[in-house]
Amino acid sequence: MKCLTLALLLLAFSSVGPADGLASVPISASSNASFDHNKETTLAVLDRTQSNSVDVNEDFLDDDLDFLEDEPEEEVVQVADPLSPWNRIMFHFNDKFYFWLLKPVARGYRAVTPKPVRNGVQNFFYNLATPIRMASCILQGKVRKAWMELASFLTNSTAGVLGFLDPAKKYPMLNTTEEDLGQALASYGIGNGFYIVWPILGSSTLRDSVGIIGDWFLYPVTYVRPFGASMGIKTVDAVNQTSLRIGDYESLKDAALEPYEAFRNAYIQYRKKKVME
Image 1 (spheres, rainbow, N blue to C red):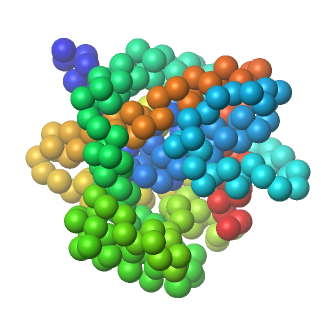
Image 2: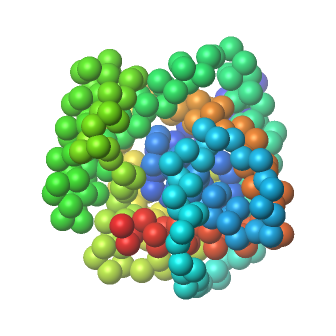
């Protein structure tokens, strides 16, 4: 029981930081931003494999299909991987963490929690991460998008009942996009550095790892006291997100000829796309 509690606490820490999508395990680095990172990263893996018959959950793909359609072939970004031995060990560690702990817990949670409730919880945590996205927009000079983030937050926090509902999505001018401090650093010409896989947090780069730290300070749940309560909230977020996409990681991993390299390359390409937006 103590081991399970410790693992869940480690998992909870991973829910802070969206920045840095998870390539090796489908859990987020931040409450919502990492969720979308994982979606697009795994979609990119699917696009780069030789299998076109993978059955991927429709809810998991949703609007991200645009990432795969009608795009010219992009030049592959090469990022140094001097920590390859460490990264491969962490990739396999995260893989086992998913199958041995996260997935079983998420399956149990899904069995007793209706999907509308889980969708509401996801909306709540996405709304709660507004300071991360808004700060990133301001640092990048995206003033209009920063105002959209604020307007969406106010709408969902009031008419959306503290963010559990998402009435802002009905208004195109209030639709927000994923932003994080890793993207803000990139906008100032700071390169990726080298590729690194963190335990629990998953795929990242040196630049995005610095961004994770900044995202952590901007995430309101970080300041919940006592500390155990903060960890518990983040655990709920991570388990809830995983419950909404069980099976997708397995399918996409099986579709990749070399999973470590496939997820690494897809993550780097995904981050390049987000920085250029």
